[in-house]
Amino acid sequence: MSNVRVRFPPSPTGYCHVGTARMAILNFLFAKKHGGSIIFRSEDTDKERSRREYEDDIVEQLKWLGLSWDEFYRTSECVESHVQAVKRLIDENKAYVSKEESKKDATVQVEVVRLRNPGKVITFTDLIRGDITFDTTELADFVVARAIDDPLYHLAVVVDDNEMSITHVIRGEDHISNTPRQILIQEALGYERPYYAHYPLHLGVDKSKLSKRTGDVAVKSYRERGFLSQALLNYIALLGWTPPSDKEILSLDEMIAEFELRDLHKSGAVFDIEKLRWFNRHYLLKEPEDSFLHTATSIMKTVFEERNTAWDEKKAHAIVPLIRERISVWEDLYTFLREGEFDYFFAAPILDTTKISGKGSDTKIAATHLERSQELLAPLSAEDFKNMEVVKNAVWDYATKEGRAAVLWPLRYSLTGRERSPDPFLVATVLGKETVLERIREACTRLKSP
Image (tube, rainbow, N blue to C red; front, side, top):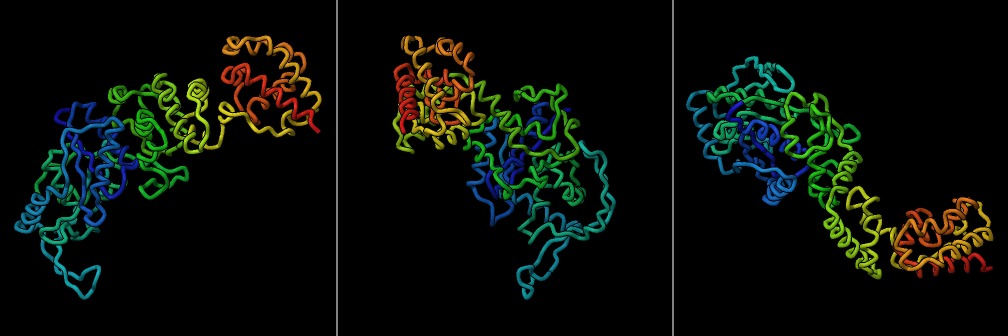
C-alpha cells in the first residue's frame, strides 16, 4: 500500500476525550504501519462552540500520548476552497439556492444551498465491516451550505479530504450514516472516493456510549489523576483490538508492527477503569527508581504541607518501596496520604485500647505478648533494625509457638494504630529501634491502665 494519507479530524468543542484519542491512535498506527502521512485537521465548523483552548488541549494531550503528525490545518482556514466548491456545484446545476423559513424564526426567509440528490443506491466497501449499501432517495436534496459563503460540515469534510489527498478515512461507526451524503458530494464534484473503515465505539461500564459529557473521560483528567501516558496509550489502543501476538503490554513500535484494520473487533469494547489501572500499575512498576522516588516524595511533601503535618524526608524515602507495592496510579498515593494512611511513620499513632489486643483477645494476654516481644527486640542494635529479616527472626519463633495472630496483631497495631497496615517487621525497619520499643511500651501502659 503506497501513498497512504490519513487524518485526525477532532472537533475543538471540548477537551480531548478518550474517543478522540482512540481515533487518533488507530489512524496513527495504520499510517505508520504503511509508511504513510498523518494530517491533523481541526474541524472548527461549529463556530459557536469551537474554542482555541480546546484545540490546544487536544494537541497537547495527543502529543503527551506519544502521537505526532506531518501536517496541520484548520477547517476555518480552508473556507475559500469550500466556497469555490459550492459555487461550482451551483454553476453545474448540481446544487441550487433554496429560499426557506429560518429554523430559529419562521417569519424570516433564509437562503440555503441544497445538493441535487440523484436518489441512487450507493455501496461502499468498509475495510472493517465489508460492503455497506444505502438507498440515498430518503435523503432528498440535502443542505450543503447555509449560504454560498457558509458551507456546512459534510461539504467541508469532502473538499478538505480531496485537497489533502486523504486515502483512508478511519473513524467511529457513528459516522457511517454520514458516508452516503459525503459520497454523493464527492461524486458531484468528481472526486476520487477514499477507503472507509468504521470501527465500533467503545462503551461505558453501563454499555452506554462514552462522550465528552458522559463521566470522567477527558484525557487531561486521567493525566491529572496520575495515569502514565504509556499506560493510557496501551490500553486505549487495545480497546476493540486483539494483536496477533495476543500480548497486552505493547510498546508503540510493537503496536505499529502488529496493527491491521482487519483485526479490529466488530462489536463495541467496554472502557474498564480497573483494567486501565492494571495497565498503569505495570508501567508504574517499570519506572526507574530515581524517577519513582522523586515523584512519590514530591507528592508526599505536597500533601504533608497541605495537612500541616511534620515532614521527615528521610522517612519518606524509606517508605517509597512500600508505596510502590501498594499503588496502581499516583492518585492512590494522594488518597492514602490524605486519609492519614502513612501518618504512623512520621508521628506516634493515637491508640484505641480496645483494638490493641485484637477481636476476642484477652488484654492481659496481649500485654504479655507485647512485653515478651519487647524483651526479644531490645538486644538488637540500631543497625540490626535496618534489616527486616533480623527483626522478624527475633520474634518469629515466639510468635509461632504462641500463635502468630495473637502475637503479631498487638505488635502491628501498637506500631501503626491501624487495623490494616503493612508487615510489622517492615514498619519496624522504617521506625527504628528506639521508636519501636517506645510504642510497644506505650501500648503496654494503655493495656494495664484501668
